[in-house]
Length: 453
Ligand code: TYD
Ligand code: MG
Image (cartoon, rainbow, N blue to C red; front, side, top):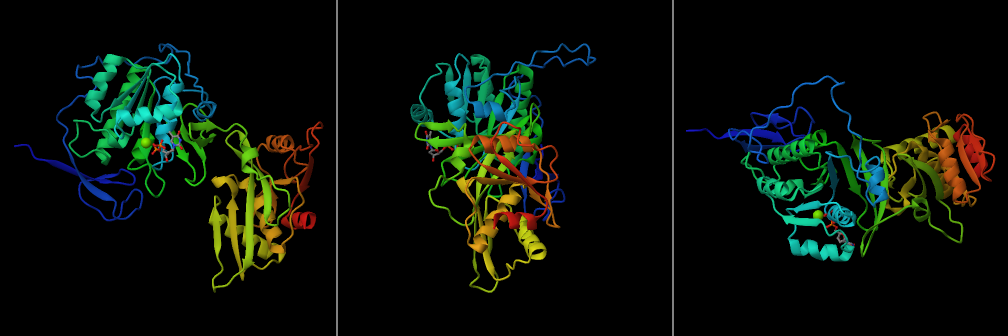
């Protein structure tokens, strides 16, 4: 009699253990171990039952270089985050919260490609539901095949009949392989199914997109392991109350890992946003205190964003510090710098900080603008119009240089800003002659205060 073999997996990072443990030794999370049945005698992967002649070792010189022919899609934002199009044989994971628009994004991709055979496997929706969605987006590609299926063995059988050029799997959590007994969505199922698609992609050269759900904490459900298996990880994010969506590269074996694509969710699907700065900055007539503009950079792309601060008298004992789209710890550090170096007193003030447009910014160059907006609200004095900021703040109140300052300056100039404050430590900044923008170098927060208030 064969014994049922079980293993415990950490649902956060995928670590494995033969017995239950309370705290995961690899990621430190508590109470994440779940038991799963594994059975491994069935051997071969289900997409190809026949034994494959194994690849022979070759020297690097023997391997024929194949020209990297990427599939360039109609979606310039997607091309950008993928590093210039879809690489043949790549495995791409797109993660995001439910309802953010992952299915819409990939169905749209499938429908807008022309003369490319796409297979869209859906384990989440029926073909009628997908048809309805396709009608909203607008059907173009006559070679877009929809397959509502969850068993990988059947999916691969259809793939062999159809020979698609791109495969989309919505979602990896709904797929199920015969190789393991546990239910769909469990760690071992996800890993095994992803492994099958990985082998298929590598052996056939067909790019495969996997959609993955995200847990509350923002990690792709289950699988840190998934992130290791795939070539590219894209994160689809955005505030559901705003229509803007951001597609961020988290890992990319074929390009930069800090790219960013911006979309707007509309009635007819997702629209690419090619001029993000113009929508992130509110055009207003009157001047208000607490508002300033930062020249930030996301990946290779300059982005001007609006930071809004509100400093008010604290009513309760402990003053509040609330941020949206910006790291709360970092704001507390900036407040400490203002207290220690410039003599402001925030102990009895509530401070709220918001990045407009529902996006979140990690570029440290936003610091200078954050400080400017906080001070503007503290003093209740609006900043002069048409100025923007780009610089990182150090603990001693120095304004530190940021990378690619020329690019930031020229974007600000393009959008009609008249002055930009940058760090004096940035070398060779001379407003590139032609542009009318005035570049003001400041070295310390005190200098900035003297200049703007
Ligand atoms: P969906 O792609 O189903 O999200 P996910 O696959 O990430 O769970 O997107 C769902 C949301 O998008 C839903 O609230 C409806 C909205 N939507 C539009 O606003 N316009 C459209 O054209 C489409 C297809 C969806
Ligand atoms: Mg979906």
